Image (tube, rainbow, N blue to C red; front, side, top):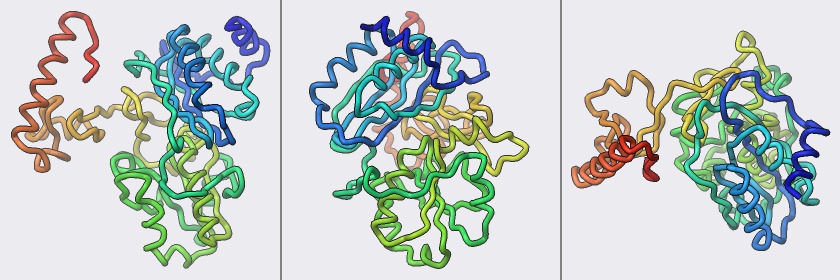
Length: 322
């Protein structure tokens, strides 16, 4: 069965591999679909990934599938073919990038209530959704003075990169987004709403919510920031900064090259090379973003964890808390 999926991947290529070199292929994917067999599908999906050395996280729910995984070209191609073979996911699309090292520690397949948690009942992108905009057409839309551009990501993501002129809701979680919309009556001041996120899933669900709230002209960037950075030349780009990604690379830049950010393992915020020189930075313990919101007891625990990580490194192992 597995060889069948690999054959399907070879005979019917669906996507060009990124030009950037890297030992591991990273696939970010999602698909909204009515999927009633989550529980029975979890174990076969986990087994497929485990057998083929794929690591990352895949969430499945009654509304579809979402996640990011990494592995060899052959393994990821096989996984995409395996998912396409499921009737509910036949139309699934994914974004590819490269990583110089395996960016995940383990493989997790989880059954959830939502594949992206907004916390609003009956929001169904299969029923109502905004208008997709291809990356090549995005600049014209967001440069239109009749358009309000909204970043649907959270504050730690927008801190390192955002589209020029975009509104940043400064949300801590996606659950806060519906209340932010309801409390910002100024969003009705212009006829067009353009929304974006990392890979497309949050803004797709957000456009469904906006349409339910009575907004008429609602658009979203197809494939998200990742697709834009892959397809739009840097000299034409309206993207400023780097794009946060949910793996050990921390960020990517134009051409989907690995960025230069690190992650503070105390607060999970991305930090720059400049922030690493801050007196508040201590690897695995604190950074300028979280130093004043943590106690000495917290930092003691983080130091103990960091010590265990260092010992694991000396043994040539990877500590699960790293």
